[in-house]
Length: 271
Ligand SMILES: C[S@@+](CC[C@H](N)C(=O)[O-])C[C@H]1O[C@@H](n2cnc3c(N)ncnc32)[C@H](O)[C@@H]1O
Image (cartoon, rainbow, N blue to C red; front, side, top):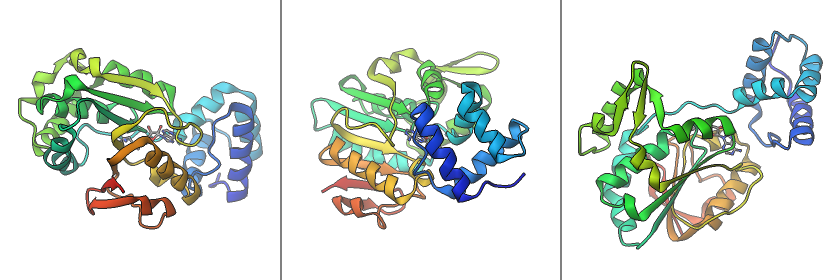
């Protein structure tokens, strides 16, 4: 078994789009190749053509592929200095609005929006905020809405929370069972969980802050530009955009609509 060729990936993406409406046609071919190879290994399928046949004729097989293509690595207060920057520089500006709308796009299992809810609570803004938490994978959206995270990760998250400028004992925000930590459901009152596909769906509200971290790295230039345009159209004037630390706007046409506020933390402002 080897990584499928770019032509094979094109065929797979076209047929998946036709059959299921999921659009992977503009995902970066290098990372997609590795993920498709991993899916083939899991499904014990050595031949690409046979794999393609199974994906397009069996929704269960397609769901396995989707799981592989939707890379769900995440963490609460991931890159904690970014959250610290948001807390110190962006939140005071958000505080000037009567109502605050935030979009966590491609949020995976919810670590990002739940972290934001805690941060806003501590800054006294949660009650007048709405955090829209979206991902294209319905399974992770369901999981995110539960606010449950593996207990074994809480030590890491606590360290992140402290570095991010957390003001309390982090344990105050969750109750622990032997395996899981359940975040305080009160935090969820100001959160909305939904599917949204950045490749195919459009504007659905106007936001003061959008976080889309560690998602654009999986997209090609064309899709990245589409998504940046979508974010531009979804932000209020002078609204904020935060990308992952390895992502940048510099080489994308739609990047010219944003001013860079912090080079390393990838915080931008709509021009
Ligand atoms: C690596 S995770 C990033 C999670 C979180 N933003 C973070 O930085 O910790 C990437 C997420 O992007 C989501 N994703 C991939 N393609 C997407 C698309 N077209 N629309 C919305 N979400 C997408 C995946 O399902 C996955 O949950």
